[in-house]
Amino acid sequence: MTTTRFAPSPTGLLHVGNIRTALHNWLLAKRSGGRFLLRIDDTDAARSREDYVEAIRADLAWLGIAAEGEERQSQRFALYEAEFERLKGEGRVYPCWESPQELELKRKVLLGRGLPPIYDRGALALSEEEKAQKVAAGDAPHWRFLLDRDEPIAWEDGIRGPQSFEAAMMSDPVIRRADGSWLYMLPSVIDDIAMGVTDVLRGEDHVSNTAAQVQMFTALGGTVPRFAHEALLVGTEGKLSKRLGSLGMAQLREDGIEPEALIALLGRLGTSDPVDPALRLADLAASFDLSRFGRAPARFDETELARVNAAIVHTLPYEAVAERLPDGMDAAAWEAVRPNLAHVHEAADWWQVVTGPIAAPDLAEEDRTYLASAGEVLEGLDWEPGVWKALTSALKEATGRKGKALFLPLRLALTGMEHGPDMGAMLPLIGRAAALERLRAV
Ligand code: GLU
Image (cartoon, rainbow, N blue to C red; front, side, top):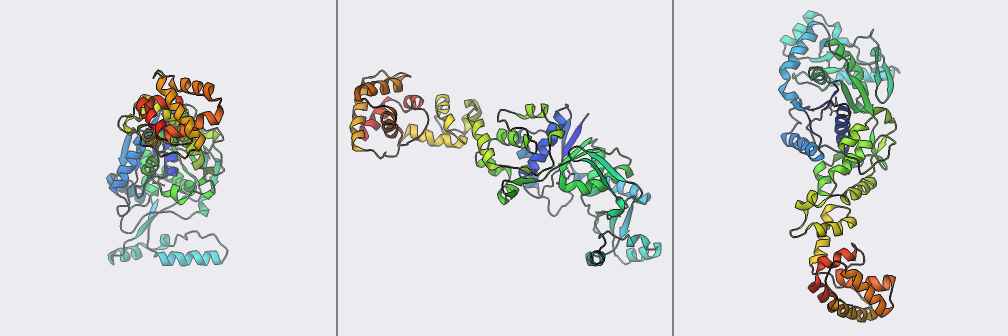
């Protein structure tokens, strides 16, 4: 069974890039009836915050992305410790004492000689006695994972194709700090094994981590999962804007973005398949296919998000939005204004137009006379659903006006606006008394 996971660090709000990763992992699992897990990477106690954990859960729930299980790395330290001891016993992790300054100097020397800045494994040359002395002096080491330089590193990336790395060209990664705290690399692999993760799908910024982690899976006796790395997410003008790169979903929600719009757009982002506002999670899962993803940066286009959002708003049934509408606004009113909305919250503006008071329209003198007769005509009509049609037909007949000259002054007088929802639906909502009053007020 396919098992995927989304592993955010709760050190900030989820932005569209994180949501893309979460969604694609969910789709990858669900496409074959698999499991999707949430793993909170909160090993960094100083930077992790509980309110971010809650925001992550709330955002996923809002989007309809449900996890089959949730694990927190901060509750799994005993497991990491045990696995670490095992690797230590096997000589796959080793203590190091270089200070950041020393390491930086070593790097500079190598770069200066035109050599790749690979860690020289200086710490491996220390004798047992030297190490014991340092420990006795209270000088705690940090720890590195010993890469096997004879073992080539290769994997078939679900998006990037065949990948291969030379362990000899890589530094042994630091996996644990001198204060005992964990870096991301090793706990992630321990968890992926323990949680039975079969597929790791994440951003291409993790490719070099994967190269080291492939050996960690093997060293821990686990099965190396299938890996796939998605291209960078960028905005329309290059880098993802600061706004989108740091904005949480709560902000997008406040801006009036529907979860379905983000799902429809992000579900296809990175492929050349068209974005279809009608597609929901289940549809996207059924057609999700890593081979459709390209290696070129994926562009997140806010204009397209707005377009998809509007298209979705135009199909939302009253029941789906009722609690977000102003008091008194019923299904007929929602259906009347819905085609004119880019966001659900704009319904309130049209409801204000219906219930009044409305802005006094700017009218030409001849239109005032025309509207006065419109009031008289309307007074004589039966107040029934087709009243707008009856009114305009009668006025056309009586005045010879047509097109804009026939309709616009009426719209202006009745709504105070030049554009808006179909008057055939608006007039019955405005009601007879208010309509007559507005025609007479001009
Ligand atoms: N916490 C890591 C991150 O947010 C997880 C990476 C991974 O998916 O392995 O980058």
